Image (tube, rainbow, N blue to C red):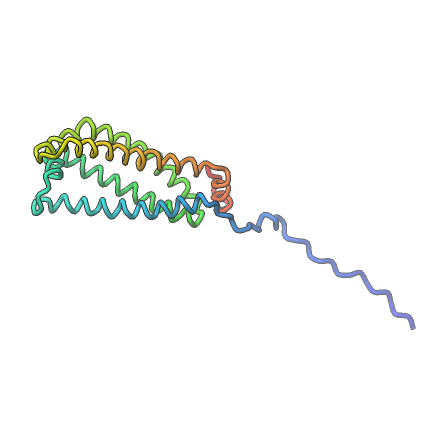
Length: 201
């Protein structure tokens, strides 16, 4: 008795449509993002701590004499400028801290926040330095002269102030902008973006 021929092998079910689009390999994190994230967390933490301590010093300055701080608070306009400047510094530090933490997780919003932080920091540094040189620094230097500080110390203070503002307020944010604009950095953030989120600018 002959056996009937075997029937055709069952066909495998076809893959679901757009299955290739559903798979997303884990994003590769460039070294630049890790450097930005770690340095941003460290620097923003230092800026937050020092600025909060400076704000506290303003309100307890009556108990601890400080000629330079007293000069900064000698007029209503200087007091408002000092407090507003510190509050802006706190806001920028919070932006940097949040953006740095998000960047380490390759969150697309973190890149946009760091770009905005960089631009705002450069603008704030330039405006702050102009106001310092034409308004605040003459008041501080007059107090320093009354304290009989040597001219070389005053000159060193000027140089350190300008160098610090240029390096921290201008060069560092520009470096961050340059690194965030690199193709591999943008690709890493875009690869981790949700399907409904627009690509990074």
